Image (cartoon, rainbow, N blue to C red; front, side, top):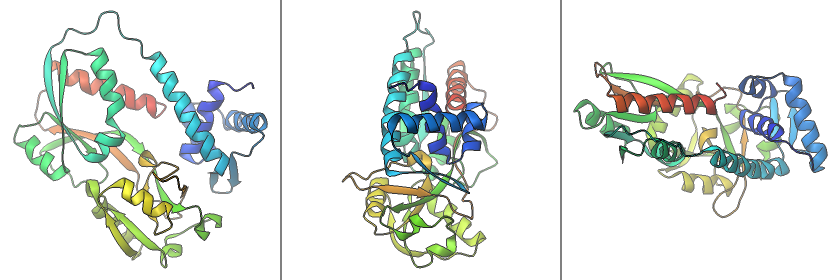
Length: 303
């Protein structure tokens, strides 16, 4: 089998963005190169990986399974490339970083691992809490920085905010929901669907603003504080939800499949950000941490 890492990268970019054009932008190549790579992958596998529609590329069941394996391949490659520096930094300091649950669970661990390897003498004192509590502690001087979903919060003039990562939000539904066969889905199609609302990381207030902007009133069945509970409910066809690709997994814990679909009324993206008190002069360790977060997140976004 003649499958290259480049083909896998192009496939993953297309699967996660849902569009050949966007994947081409992320990979800094032409759309025809993306299309050719996917076509050759499908020929090698003898399986269709996407259903091609006017509004984008939708993964088939085989495509979802292949994406899972590709993530494992890319993670193994990343691990292999993380060679420990011959002379790790001798900088010694402690940084107090607060973060919300979504950041702690789905974003930060790979960065933390790499930072510990490259800067073994800088201690990251990480604390997880709701953003309102973290903001108070940041302004009181108990924390140096806070990481959160910057797209969900109401900002204060007392802090400086910086966006690090951007992830699109899509409709999540079970693979037995008839809507998965509809080429274009709008909020109007969800009026008779039970809705599962995530309540963590101030998601509910953000999504309410989106509903109001489009004149949509959901039929809310349940409010969930944990993503795994929500994932299981969606996979079991109890309800639908709108969440970001950043926290998407193709299967629930019990092995039931979850499908993503774009909405005609584009939801706001889920943006990971970091903030610190306005007027604060960052320490050498703080600047080092910010520099690494910027470079790593830019690499992830293809920048």
